[in-house]
Image (cartoon, rainbow, N blue to C red; front, side, top):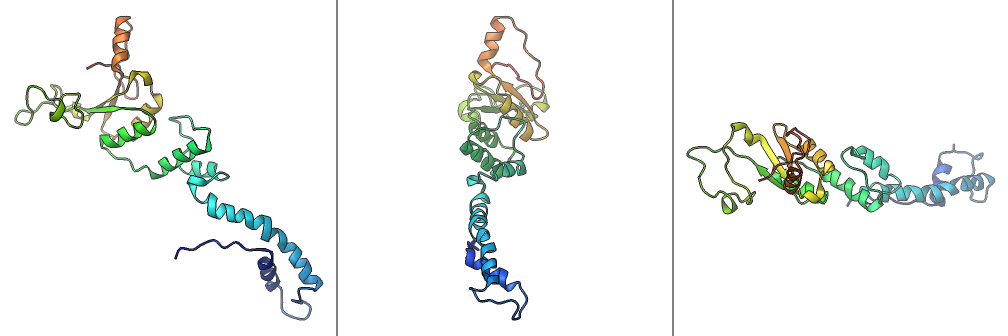
Length: 226
């Protein structure tokens, strides 16, 4: 059986403090003696206010999803506030961020990053680029069932071998510029991977007004269209 915290009352503390005294007639244990009355009075706060707070801190505050008084300490222990995003103001939202950070396992798969996007309220799609290889790749339509992990985009592309280390993250234009998501993705991405962030519709609006776009650089919004 797991250990449980046992709350102690005034009488418990009185008995413990009394036993700390030497033995002998000069140190009576009679509850009605002046010594014991003084000890009982000193034990009062320990058995009431202090024990109540200890009960709260050990039972409630030691469990992060319910912590309030120690919530800032828990957040600091797990790297919060985070430079990538503004820490929420409500207790429930802060609990959610803290628990998410505590249980975050990471991973190189697209599914991890897609789930991260969902946690931050982004519906993202990630394209992993694969160079065309003779004897392995196929010609013709390579979308849909030929690319189940990313059905809207071709499975194979003509390009340098290094494009296999590039991801394109497609983000709805309504979320532009999604700086918090870009920061999180660039933090957790595999070390050998470069990430470009794609806002397709925004590209066409900028092109229509002849506005120059920024060159693809790691960590910057990349405006492309497929």
